Length: 292
Image (tube, rainbow, N blue to C red; front, side, top):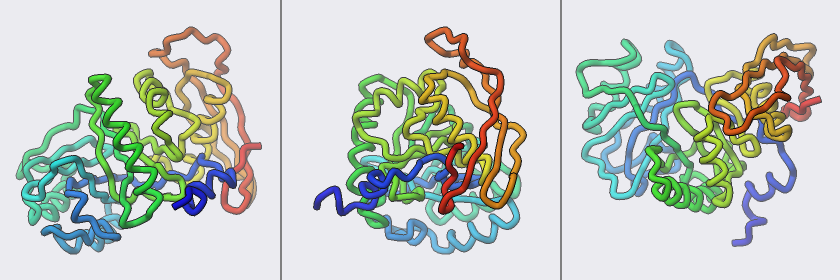
């Protein structure tokens, strides 16, 4: 099939901005489950996956804040025991029986950790790349290539980062899409050729600006503003940390913010041109924010 038939190709051609398109969740959960069992709806997967998690997620989100549950797979993964990764707390549950998944989640979100199961802190970085072909063909075509090459480069560099294939992350028109944890930074339109530059940026604690969609932990306007400012820093080649301040809605289609900048302490180069603060204004056009 020609690339021109894929929505991600058409989205790239149209020039739709990436900034501020990341999904939002206050809690992100990944459950290991072999990809061969994934269905269109990830939480309705086969192979003995427990039922009712989608409804549980909706109901619990009303109490604990928005919870997003996704599946994750690696080569030779089995379905007799599962692992759960929960962010932003960086909690890790291992050796959980499939039938115990609802109990672990319920206990965790009541107490934010439980001693009834093996619970540890996640020590390694984790990259989840959407390859959910049963949900969307773009993720199969572009996501799988990215996942395979990301795994190759991580192993080649002897990096401690774990690479996982993920069920649908949202925004398949931006495939290949991925989330980098523990930061929660979401990327789109990533290509295998960009992986070395992305990994180098990650190593330096930088956002890889050209493919950045936003942080899943930032809501609405703050995510849009932060992502656009990160793109600005990427274009200006400013190696710094960004913090959004004084976010203000000016009208139904306009808002502004002040962005504070701090020099990246891990930067390999010295920069004296980084401002302390800058003001930015944005305008919504067809529900997309455009920096003014």
